[in-house]
Amino acid sequence: MQKRSVQPGRPAGTTTRDAELAHAFGAAVPALRTERGIAQDSLAHLASVERSHMGKMELGEHMPTLALIFKISGALECSTAVLMSEAESQLAAAAKHSRRRTRPTQGGFGRRED
Image (cartoon, rainbow, N blue to C red; front, side, top):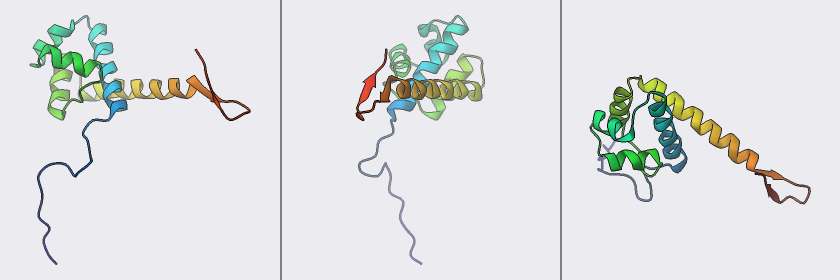
């Protein structure tokens, strides 16, 4: 059997950012941060992250690496499990909200609910 060579980088056409996950994680961080009374710039300093990068993560524009998740959870003085559980809760809430926003009508078209 011939050995396959390992090629560096991602396969063509793939990305490392999943918008839904990035937004859920981004919403989890300020939820825990404000619960603990920590300002965004203080959290960034404690996690050794640029404040602008922290802001982009909280907005869901940047997806954190595993190393950053550990740094952020340490700065929040919680486990990564707590941080990820909050992200999962945010993801579930977003999914529930999107299902509720459009409901099929008799004609088959979605109706926006506010």
